[in-house]
Image (tube, rainbow, N blue to C red; front, side):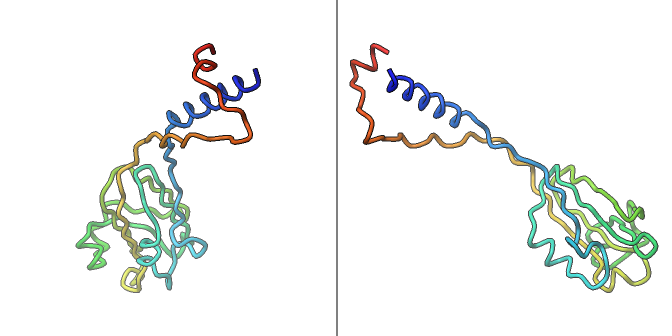
Length: 155
């Protein structure tokens, strides 16, 4: 009787694992980690060490009296063209949602901060879809008696 219960539990667990989807979760990226959005930080290296996905958030944390965040196009990013900003934030704690795949470019438009390296570009990947986990390998328990076909068919 205990063997039937163990077999039923094993089958139920295996079925649950096969059909349990892997859930994707959004990530909140604090730009510059503990340094925040400031001068003297390598944002290119920081961005290369991260993976950005649709649904993630960029959190720009900075002194609002000294900096801001502006979104620009790729060519304007390269040229630090602050006049071409499509959006500007200046709260000191800006949460920007990454809602579609592609590239986005951000600069600080205060003084020559952009020219001094206060600029960030990120590539946002499409959201991952849930995929089933692979079926677990059959477990063999040498200490347990093997059930015969007849025993299984009577179950």
